[in-house]
Image 1: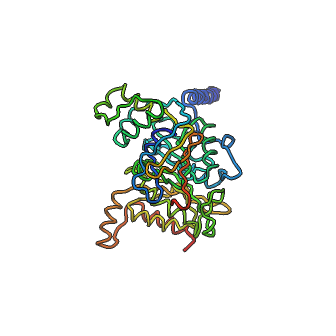
Image 2: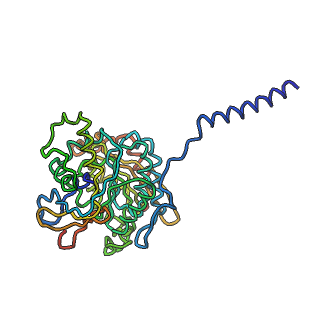
Length: 277
Length: 123
């Protein structure tokens, strides 16, 4: 009798304490990102899709690191609907210390990005331009976070660029035409502590891209990988790593022995996923 | 377009050697309040081309910045930082154009968005 009273008393106590626990510490709210219903649209502008969601998921996965990183200047190349840059601005909003640039080659996309930002009460400086043309001289070395969802779909070369919606996906041979133009520009714009989040398709040969970036002194990490019915997506984060740069210099003289931490793991992950070889 | 952006933009038409700063043709300027962030201002101070900012600010109707590059000791002055903040981040060119200082080519600014796209023969 006493025991059963005691146990029901314990249950009530547990429920009560749980209740007060949640009153004092509410379950952690999901970080705010752009809401689809507030994302503007236009027939000539690419709508948020699996690739956009993968990129924003990568930013969310790195949310705490991004807040600790305290980026002063963030930039998106090819902002399309504005879903990604708006989400980044919302993720970092509590800091109130970051400024945003976004570009797109499609004037309709830049206007739609503007509307999406405005609908969420955040701001980015917008430019209609090809990748970062016009900014490359003066913004060099100032960008702390860059995000890119490039046109990565393998297409005939003549479909690349242009002023319509095809510019959002048409990537030329192996989907690499625009990616290969963006990478050196990103290298030029990124600050010493800069991070680049970029989305690739397995068909783009991300392993080869990582090796190429490694030659420029960048470490790389897969933040999100996702296979949809149609495509296998990777969001890869690049950052400058002095070990790699030094090793790169030594490697020229002494051939390859020893990889920095995590590098072999990344390569094994990528070679497993990269079915184009 | 904020003057921060103007300070980061140059004309990259083929053959142009120094396409900076772009001359501002202001048709409509708006002011939008932005949170004051002294750390960002102190950090950006060394990266800003001061003369370009002071001149642009004047054209946008805010002639409060010193013409010559101020001594960095001024960064301790709250009054100076607030002026710097206002010019750099709160003045927006809403309608107008940016003009290449070498070729006179106009890059239109509509609804606050500069269009820097080049024609095929300019690339």
